[in-house]
Length: 496
Image (cartoon, one colour):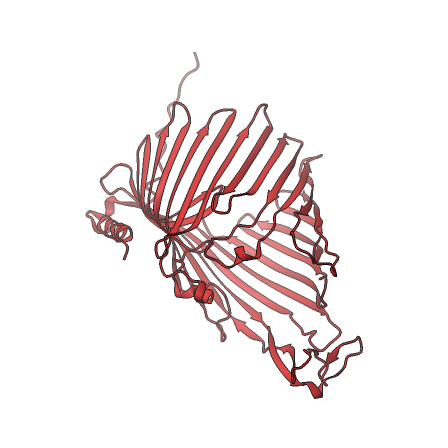
């Protein structure tokens, strides 16, 4: 066990076993849910080249109607047939704990963990291995000017979500609105709560690092009444090779010159690759009746240097976007948004291919609250880009027959036409959901949803992907209630 994690565990155990236990305070939130899902994939098969027959629309197919792919010189042709239907029963439970009152003012313990399992017959649901994952678990000491944390933590900042096992110190100068952060330790794999060496990430095969990356980061922020600014730095190194995993900086800021108006901007720079990453600027205005925003952004995907994805030289795209929402009468909201984007030159030579490099997307919707107990919403969206498109609609109606119970009916349709291949998909869904508040600290929910998907294929691989999903869950909050301060008795005063 790493020294940092060992210290955290010992500190937590010592604090929890201290006496008297009744003097310690805590709050716990438990979110648990289970559902029934089905999956039916494709299975690769082959057939001797002499047994294929011409397909009605061109090419070759098997005698029972599956499109086959034949390569000159090979004795077999490949094709895909429907796999067996598999049923899963994923269960997840997330526990969030905060404890304090250990005899040291400002000392507290924080933990957030998830327990997951698949009770189906096929174990098909992703993310259930390992069964127990610790998202965060740290001891914190907070004072007026500084805060220190030791343990597993997640930094949520401009550079994304950065998880690590280590220490973080924050120093504040309230008089000028200045905040400084410094942290370091052993990093977690990007996008997960697991070390990059975990067996659950074995599909990385020979590309998987042998040791966890070591990281160090810093942030400096200034927050005033009208202006906000922040600078961030992150460096990750593979100790086995002494090579960089990443080294990036980020700058962001906001200006609020007038009530309801704000101008925000941010940019990232990859020091390892020596290029600018995702950047954006936006102007927003909101008031009681309407609001809107216009902006520019440049998106470049980011990959750690040890992965193979950087070898594909992903190119960025530039976009202009806007959104508008209006509330003409109480209870009615109209909204719309859109974006036009264009990819940079790939710097490749493809004389036989006429490629597209631009696209657009837009959405619009309307929501109306008929009363405090009845509301409805309708949205439509459309997107066209290189290689594919998507368009559809979704709608919902919510009713509260009694104050503690909310019933929701929802449905929608999604079409996904694809370029350069067939198997266009059309998905239709509809369902019912119920949410019941049994009390101030306990809440139950349940839902049933039917998904009906059609694949537009001219061969026998146009299989049925439809399924019905059942879901049930609860949220339970409990604790010592020590954070609830009772109000003093009221005093009657006579006006003078």
